Image (cartoon, rainbow, N blue to C red; front, side):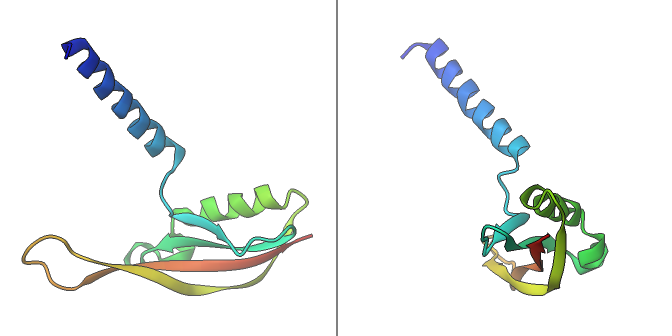
Length: 109
């Protein structure tokens, strides 16, 4: 195999990874239970970093609602929703790391 082909393949993989990172492939902000005129948007937060109101992902969640409802929206309810858990794969570390999520139910005006 030619070394140039390997180099091109590595560059292609790096380009896809960079595109994925800049496009926001994470689930920090998620629109769930979407209908034509309403939905629920959830986002990650950490209590020690300002809680749900101080989360940098809150702005992203508000932008999702603004995009969904160009004429405006009304928040019906908001509060903590079920997050996710994952076990540590590092040997010697115990416990479970839990991601906390905040949800906002909204309806378009």
